[in-house]
Image (cartoon, rainbow, N blue to C red):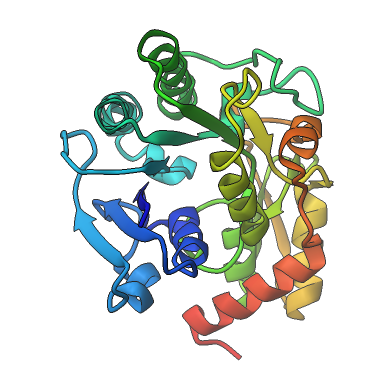
Amino acid sequence: MPVILVTGGTGFIGSNLIRELIKDKKNHIICLDNNFTGSLENIKQFRTEENFEFIRHDITKEILLEIDQIYHLACPASPKDYQYNGIKTIKTNILGTLNILGLAKRTKARILLSSTSEVYGDPKESPQKETYWGNVNPVGIRSCYDEGKRLAESLMIEYNRSCRVDIRIARIFNTYGPYLNINDGRVVSNFISQSLQNKDITIYGKGEQTRSFCYVSDLVIGLIKLMNSETSEETLLPINLGNPYEITVLELAKKIIELTGSKSKIIFMPLPIDDPIKRNPCITKAKRILEWEPKIDLNTGLSITIEYFRTVLKVL
């Protein structure tokens, strides 16, 4: 029975990943999280499963386990959360990744790092290819996360180069779906929550900035395909996972108002510092190597997510 560790397993992506992995009763899943941004509610349905266990733990501290595969997802991902304690975010990305890489080295486990499109910063090219080095402000308000993930990638590469640890790196673009924290602070959760409560929808800037949104079940399939891909020079390097369909933030707000039947009005606020103008993945590499691409269109994914938010917010 393969033992699979999911760090950050009570979070949005982590809990959805476990939801898929646990279907195979041959897998034994260990969920590791300190619940800083995750929630035990996200995994409560698994707690009675024989092939599941939860360990409350902060990955900035060492842990000893016997593992076959590691999905390393632990880190606050929304600006609101990672800026709350920038030093802690840096520690999670660096000390946490060092600890989990040490575990992978000792147990000879394959490790997949959930990196991010934020390593591209405010990109000067679009769509963003894995070969693009990015345009990141190393001392900006977002740098604790952006640079933290860039260094986490460097640690992964160096552990492979020096210690032959079997690594995978997924650069994850904007993702949404059920179990997304309603207080996440990013556009999908904000817009849906505001629309369902008929509150003003807050757009920062003019809403001309673009994003590309991947439904979470599509992302999870991509992560599993990447984890189980044959080791090669290409799979040891970062691979973008995201939906290449690009939409402006203003268009997204109007779409959510329409789908919810909301009476919300759109208001405009000043753009945050270092907010990227464009976010759009080139997924040519994922298509070719993993035979993966998103299947769920934006309208379908948003409709499912809206129904989840209705349940959480208890609105009609």
